[in-house]
Image 1 (cartoon, rainbow, N blue to C red):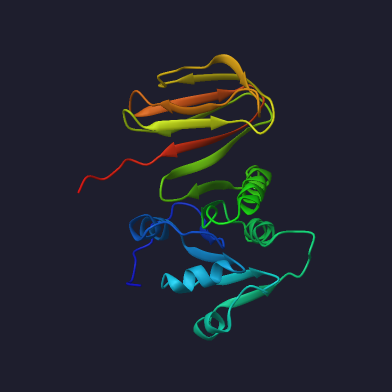
Image 2: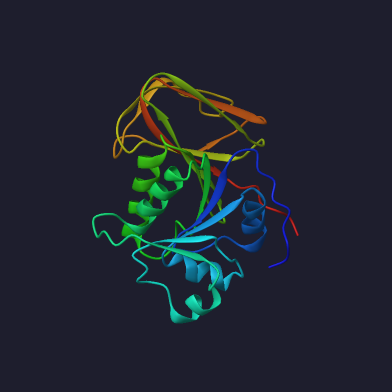
Length: 224
């Protein structure tokens, strides 16, 4: 991969998980935003295939192929063998220990559904320790955690699809800038969700009284 000028305003890492990586334009944009690349075990195989050399690989290291090991001879391997934590959990814990303030997560989706659900669970678990963004081909996702009333703001574009999901009851949700606003309402798993709302302007705000939401912002499609 060609040399990239990395622009970081806070300690930021790219964490590569063993799922489907986004297409090169998105992946390249993520790489420009980070100053460290960390792989969760088998994510190293994905990185290698994309021409990315990680700084560190974390996990029980049982998913890395011999071909990947041969190519990543300068990478640091951090062996964490516990079977009571996933490789992503170990990697996020390592990021916290290294005082990383923000992480972009790729390879979180694709393949086994149970792995994807677990990845989201780990993302929510660590969202109070560092800023996390999930990046895939279709959009950007993040958890909005509010142990007490809190407001979140996102840059958007008119017509952008915005989805909100609560994996537990989340109360007192107020939104501005959405076609279908929420005014102090609740979202609850298997009761009510906020699939495919729509941004009206270049900014939305989401205020939560208590709980957590997963907010997914669909990318703008590029015309050929």
